[in-house]
Length: 252
Length: 252
Image 1 (cartoon, each protein chain N blue to C red):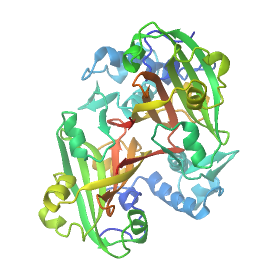
Image 2 (image 1 turned 45 degrees about the vertical axis):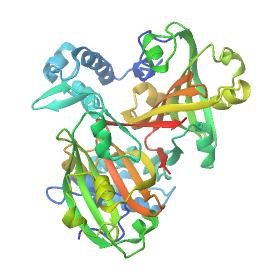
Image 3 (image 1 turned 180 degrees about the vertical axis):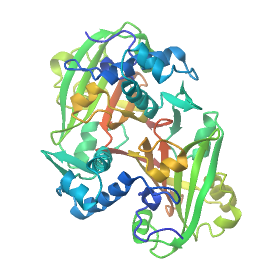
Image 4 (image 1 turned 90 degrees about the vertical axis):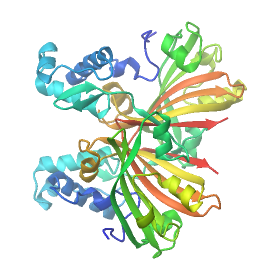
């Protein structure tokens, strides 16, 4: 039997340490710091790189690699010039409900900042994917997503201009697009297909969201239809992999 | 209007290049190689690092960083001593159906290799999460998941021994656990809660799955119940982020 009694079933088996073979030195340091992170608790200030390298008797670069992974995983975050223990990842339901609703349900305040709003003839790849006509006018609205004023994601919404002709004039980009469709235009969501994958942030995305480049992100592709089954929108939403997880209830 | 006509709606806006500011050199090279990848098509052999660094007139290390990201993202894969264009990511449905069914539906052959099978008294964290009694005997079965003989994931299943007392004797670990429950024991899945996040592979996981360490993975936590609503299993499944995406149909 090789199972420590306090093992969290969501944690890697054997804390990720191989049965045989060499443990990379940075990983041993990472495991030490991970325990320190648990002791400190959310918001706790981590010792400096220099102090950690003295404490564990390893090179600064070794500590840096361990910290880099813990930052990428969202267990730590930078605050000013220091590094503090991060809170748990947000749990966003995979559902027809909007980003807004999901974030509110977790007691956070959702926000959005407009990056760009363009109108152009629907290109072939978008037409094929979203069930639109090639050449028909479409909007592309790009917004940074916020939770409690923290930038957490980036969303591209493609929607036929015929659906929302006055998007540029009577929609407040810092509000819920779903609420706008529903309350102002009487359009209700019927169903959607989603696909979720992990990708690395591009330099532009990292700049807009304010993350280190190459941070693993969760990317959700969505194609949704209204209650009549007619195409509604094609959305590409990128969420910080260190801040978000997604939940689903299946069957039942 | 700032939208190239052939833009794929699933691709990053402006190919990920910032409107203002400097493009990192490695990223410009990455964008060039990404176009080359599209031209070559699946299975196509990429020129060597040396050839690429001469072609784009950059240092070998710059090419290496670009290739590293394309490998992490699953656009390229190593084959022998060369690097070839990878196929598209597998699309696994988020559903009560098993890994086996999902992989078969994509025309691939599922497989599993047993890493370990242990029996121990249920620890507190597992009892709390999975609705089991602390101290009751539970199995922990750990298996590497395969698709067409390629290692693609690592699964930890925790299940009460009372449910499957003879798991160690009459279950073939290279078969579907769900089929075993259903066909042999008459236990059917009722519903499940899942949570999906992105994590980095630990050294042990990287070794077992055969990936580079710190490859971004998709981690799915599952707690499932039978048709009576009684706890069935707690599963932790790690999928290669460069090989898998997950799909869901919502509402409708």
